[in-house]
Amino acid sequence: MALPIPRLHLLEIDDQSWFPSPLRACVQNCLTFLWKLHAPILQPTSPASLVAQTLQTVLDKTLPSYTFVDFCSGAGGPTPFIERAVNKIYKPSRNHSTQNGHVSANGHANGAVVEEEQGVDFVMTDIHPHLLAWEKAAKKSDHLLYVPTPVDAGAAPRDLLALANTTLPIPNPDPRKNKNKKIFRLFSLAFHHFDTPLAAKIMRNTLETHDGFAIFELQGRDVGNLFTVLMLGPLLWAGSWYWFWGQWGHLFWTYVLPVVPAVVVFDGLVSCLRTRRAGEVMELVEKVGGGRGWRFESGRSMHTWPGGTMSWFIGVKEGG
Image (cartoon, rainbow, N blue to C red; front, top):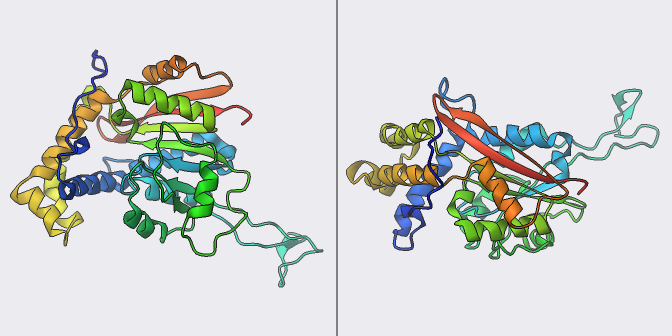
């Protein structure tokens, strides 16, 4: 049931400069883990897989024509898991060629060679790059990249993809990689952090410089999501010893002094009140004078029974 209240841009503890970095890292580890968590019966799939399925449904056959640039990636967040889920669907195939429907021993068939099908690339960016975490994540996938220099979501350049292609320390870079690809921005559990002036600036920059965007939030201004966030406290209390075994600082701040679950729940409740509904995102689009030549879709999908829902708003430049 939706709450009849306006969006409230209240304080989140994790956003504050005075919040200690070690504790912030623990909170972000929890949020990253929740993106990949798949609890049978309660969850049809992980939230990261749900994002991948939504992108596939909305973008359909055009999805591989984009490179997805995640803004406000933090220490990586859900991007590595979304990349993995998307590329399970769009998995690259090796070079091969056929002769009467069969692959020849030398890979040739009447001189015809079928060109390799490329996977889908994801690029992590942030105004404060987390290089060590990104390097570690990028080593696990040829399709997970990052921009090592600061990227302001409100002033991102048109040639952002070229910047990523030429500066990433990846092995054996392919000069054809991302050639003719369009840029699709991702805001995964990020857009609710922006107040209205900053959100409008980011929206204007997005519409003026790139070819598509998606806003994904795992919470909202309704009773079901508020209840789901409250249940995160008992969940983290029950499972952290197993999920974060060996991270003794994390376990100390969970069980001895339960700061981590308290902050996750408090910030989660505030995030619910900060989250924009589809109509409010559309108002931002209209406020910056954009929208002409774009197609917009929005919706909600359950990620956790009984009331946890993922809201999404996707914009695609027509003929871009």
